[in-house]
Image (cartoon, rainbow, N blue to C red; front, side):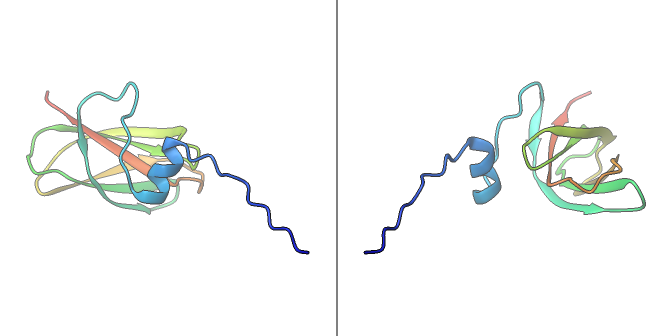
Length: 105
């Protein structure tokens, strides 16, 4: 007889967000959530994060995160409409995602 055993997988909120594209509240990250439309490596040691920004003149802060959700690096930029590209310095290639927020100045 063949016995199949299945182990339950604990789906934590960060894992669910990664799997299903959900957004999570970020502790200590004030402001309106902004949709990240692109995350790609740029020149050596930099990543480009592009965020949808319907209004210009707001401060956009983006944070690079690894697979565990740990913040790796951040940068702030003044938004332009309809999209803002924020360059963020991070030398490693373990960046998995980015989250961005907009605040009024």
